[in-house]
Image (cartoon, rainbow, N blue to C red):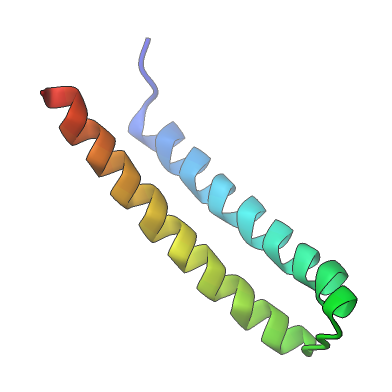
Length: 71
């Protein structure tokens, strides 16, 4: 059985939301170890940037593997 488009969308959105939250919490906990002290707003903005890069990377790799699969 294949996954419905709706469930694929729910999975993708959940993955992004969890990844974003994890990135922000990790930054808040780890940055002080390196004497970096960004504000909450800066941490949230960095989380958006890291999440966008992750989405682009994931999409590019998915397309690359799909192309390889066709050969």
